[in-house]
Image (cartoon, rainbow, N blue to C red; front, side, top):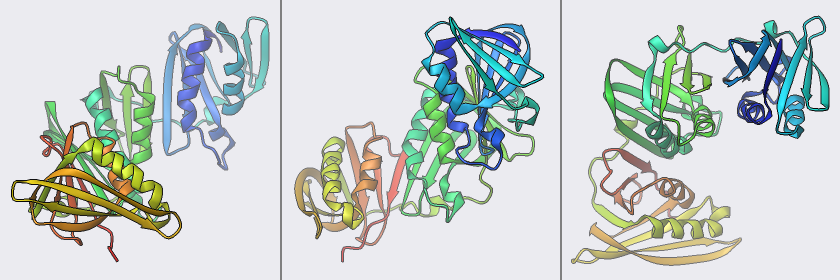
Length: 376
């Protein structure tokens, strides 16, 4: 292998694929980054066997070839190089990679590229295409609700389904459910239903940008992996096996109280309450009261033996019965941070039944179910 690349592009690509490098593994090669020069590109790859990333950058290829080298060593060294052309030359006999930039040179010991675990290849013929902006927004509005605990692996994933012209993403940790729907431009004959690790979806957001016009996706032949394809980048991930929870049965259909409130005002109040309630699992009381005219208010209180007391009152439009209910303020903060409408509707029944939060005028596209906490 003999190839020349831009230091800036090389450094950027290494930073992106580094998130797929295994931090701890019994296989030393998983701590390496795979470099392959062919067809006028340098392909940079990493995998931890659950997540794999390929990134291709334009290069001047004098001789094709491939090698794997320790990720941290290569990244740290390339980041210190001047913004100029970096030359990479492999001694195939010793698996040693020469890295040169101007007067700087380093020799890095590598491992044979043939030992690197294969990352599944993207198949454009079997792919579905999504609008990049819509896909990123959907992920940001649901992935935070996935569980971070290992007890139930299915809850660590985002459920993605495509049927006809409707795509749905769902995530839940057992205490809340985030549901996002979007209408696609194209109709797909064959339904798709997969559970993708939430960390994969968040990684997809991280490595793409607002300029990503489209994201293509296909499943591996054995249906146990998903591959996303964007310009220059491919991300492959294991799929979580199993049947997803029947989330539709949990979404409440009827309500005794509908409270419309400013998104920003409620977000600020929850952010303040969180400061006081860290020792009480963010338990915050919401006392909803209304008048015949429809005007009303939400009195928000929080108390902790360790930190003190918090009280606030915000205006709201209340239709229905008065209600005192407790929610996890951090769970409310999470959803209010991704809502894009000025007002939200909080729909409730009793203080022991789930509430439904929807952005006003967007209730069919985004729903957030949240379980109440015990008032004590």
